[in-house]
Length: 296
Image 1 (cartoon, one colour):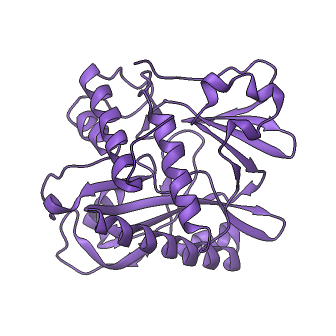
Image 2 (cartoon, one colour):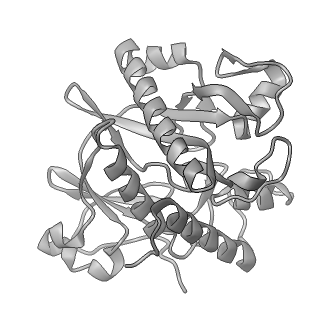
């Protein structure tokens, strides 16, 4: 099984090639194509992860539909049949991995919700007892559940690592009203997703949302609670301070932490078993989250 590393769709105008997604102009819309590229530690790896882009798109579809009553989103369609004739010519590549979306002005702040102490949050807590300026109880371990989920914004980086920031700094970047709105909505979506995943035996450790503006309206954009933007752990063996089974990129991160790579480009080639294992975890995540087998 081969993955799609990047697209080059004849007759279409490529606006941007992101870490994972290729974005094309579609008049008053955007066509977002999720490739099988993998990004970890803010570096794009040379090996595609087969099926990854399709899994990301279809999990996002599930959550966008489930959370539409909480906050509006940018989705127009997930169906190739709704695309223009020029785009439909590329159906073999696009099927299952596209989102036709409204154009927005993305807010320059990533909206991270954490229900558990992990990743950069754990590293920050070890140094200061805080995460993004939020004081946390003493004595927490890595992966400890927090007293309540916290909103920990970050600045977006086109290259290099994103930077965790305080809520007050986020207010200074996007405005007080916008910061309050995205904190509230990110929290609602996280709690909704966390509760539903716990029923399925999965812990939603943390997740990242992005929002954009159309006029004065702020809506949810990009992706929603996928293995790329979230940490999913098996609930029955998720314990503070212990290694736990996961369904996300943590599998890749753990492997990379065991190597001598210094987390700066160029990213190293991934072994076949890591590529295969990542595909398997993403497919398992889809089945558990949606309750369905992936059919394209």
